[in-house]
Length: 128
Image (cartoon, rainbow, N blue to C red):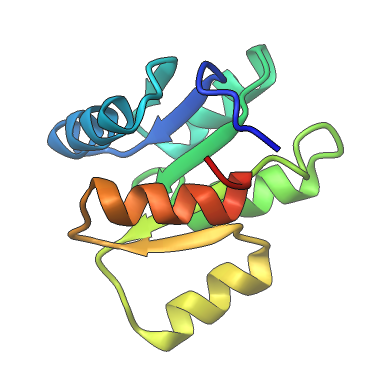
């Protein structure tokens, strides 16, 4: 199976610098159809506006956190199978367990590089 490198990807983070970093890493890998949201609520609205092939979301955001966004996505019939990667500075095992229980597709701990992101994308989307 080959990955659609033009599929729309939604990146969600309340920190503009992190959005830029993730966008740049995705561009290095070959994805350039990237849209941004600065919190979970904005992301959820965008997910209802048009289809996305993947969500990459930060965990810690206000007013809606990444884990809350993930739970909303998994509870929505139209979105529940959407690949979802959680990005966080928290590597504590209970965070990983919470994300897995909520249905996360994969998990990335900050800081990370293009190689790490590509490896996680490959496990979620299938090989490149």
